[in-house]
Image (cartoon, rainbow, N blue to C red):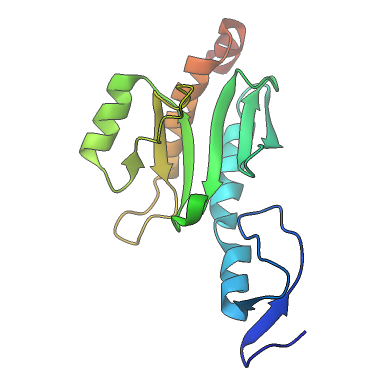
Length: 166
């Protein structure tokens, strides 16, 4: 149903980051941005993550795309977040050693960040990487691949780490 000029009245259930109420007015431009936001970054991340041994992809409970090693939740490789809680950026979160995490955040705080630790302690030693960086800080996908390999070595069983190195 049409609303005001340039706006559309929508009523649908969304499983993604936009959850409008019935009859909520939203700009056509906003819909286009939300549909295309982070798609290219997710496709590149997917190529890197699924190239690692026995990694699969699933949708997490919060709507984030998750990559797991052998499909078990306790062996998480990374989470892909697109506009998490309205922050307007695409990012990937993966486990990292605390020294490595601190070094990355210290050297480039616009590109790397420490994800908020949950009350259960999850994400304590994780690193966040901003994927949709500005023109000044283009995303270095070889660096993202190296960080994901480090995360894989940290989270995967020894036999899979040997398969990666082998």
